[in-house]
Length: 146
Image (cartoon, rainbow, N blue to C red; front, side, top):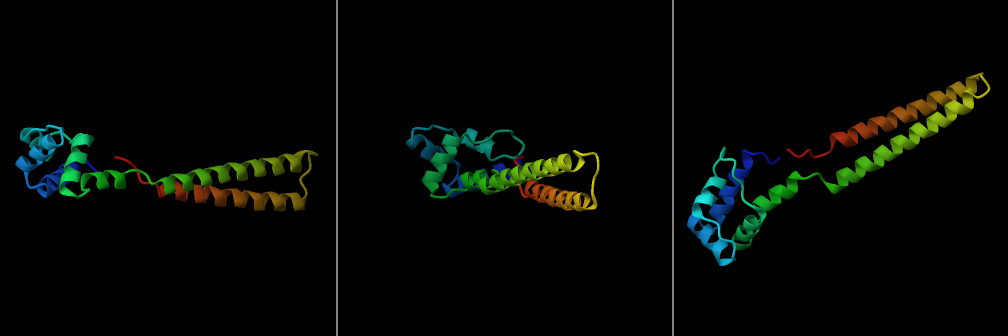
């Protein structure tokens, strides 16, 4: 998880990988993205509220050859696979609910529910609840941005 506390630590690691504040500032300038030593220093200080702009992260990671902050940013975003799984589960829950609703409508259409219809509705309701539990599990697997 990428937090306001962890980001300055990663920023310091990235700056150190560049050879320190002066070298990192020079690397930015050499890549036509001037960023002062003071600005870099604030970004590696917890509680400052200052963070590296993406173009500066890209410059420093290119210079150091290490994707320290960028990888942490990627790791912190929700996985496309998790999102796809949730979409699938949500769709299947909707389909199970629609199927249950259809069977209920047919069973009560004549005003009488037979034992066979009741058993079918019970099975269909269990299927619906099982699908809902799968959807809840998919929600629980999401990576939540902070």
